[in-house]
Amino acid sequence: MKRSTILAMIALAIPLALQAQVVATGAGGDPAIEVGIDAGAEINVFEGDNLTSFGLPTSTLRLTIPAGNLAVETLIGFSRTSSGDTSASLLRLVPGVNVPLGENGAYVRGELAIARAAFSSGPSDDSDSQFGFGGAVGVKKQISDGPVSWRAEAGVDRWLEDTDNGQPAFTAIRALFGISAAVN
Image (cartoon, rainbow, N blue to C red):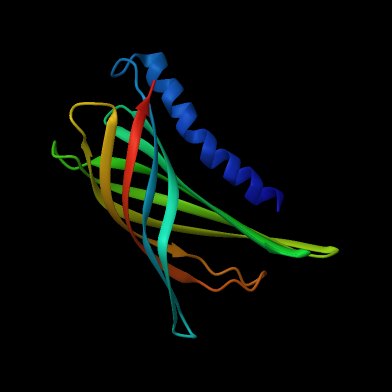
């Protein structure tokens, strides 16, 4: 439990540390953090049981920090369900590094992922973590030379099996459309 919490904190801190390094070295002037929101669809394909789940809409918060020609970007998703004394929550962090593909706004991203699920039912509490890796391709275009951009992205993440907690491996396939704004 402590290890996954520490990894989640590190995943959120890496973009801020990289931004501080870019500012300290003077690369590219005054970089702007981008904050955005995405909506789309996700398909989760589980092995063994041949189970496919489909979610629409799927929404994430996106935090982007430029680092020279690259961008460090984290997708953040949170959901909570409760009924009476029973509740479940899921926090998903998917940090990655965007590499531009030319000058047309296209990019490719490598990503690592961590998900933290917590369950509470009356007097008992339980939590599990799951890790994954993957990538995405997308395009991001600025709207009218302003601080707002739109993007379209498709990605695949492979979530690893956690036999200790009974979590099966699965593949998550997503298609997102989003909008973000640069904040100085």
